[in-house]
Length: 61
Image (cartoon, rainbow, N blue to C red):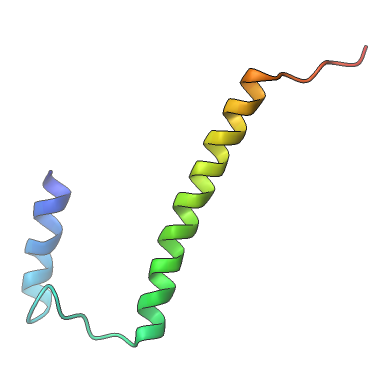
């Protein structure tokens, strides 16, 4: 909750509006791609861990 309230409040001091961020469109999209890639990576890790727990590999002796 503090992050949701605190970040916009801090940004209000650094720029004229929290909704207007002066950056080129390609940098904004690059930031969005970074977030999506992070979530996809975390989902992939969670899914692969679940698969390993369901079907463990046999150890060769």
